[in-house]
Image (tube, rainbow, N blue to C red; front, side, top):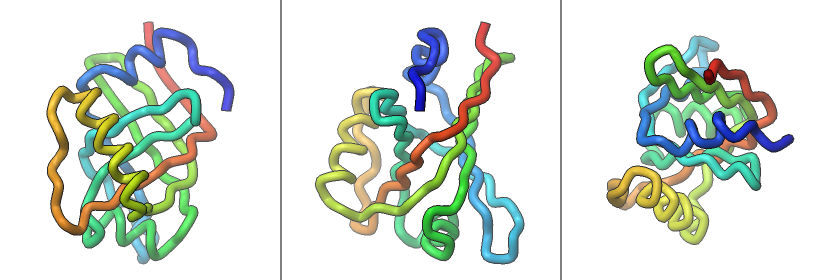
Length: 129
């Protein structure tokens, strides 16, 4: 993935919420509000969640499935699309939690079944002015 323009990168560091769209086993979309982090150097978005959540179950049922993560603030928006996997590796989940705390100013919830959705972003659409 190429480097994003500065204003887009900056927008992705703000304390905004986003929506994550995954696909249910019946083919219908599931849209959930989430907090996430963006790692521009790696082209990776991270979403912490619980293993039994609908979004994690959708992705576990279709490993490497495509997702869309859309952050909106007023009339400005960025959509990150890519393939997603669910990761339970403690070191990677801890890195996701560290980045979350840095972005949102407080640590994320820490349930015992916490996992991380990792999105390898390959398409970015935006309206940033």
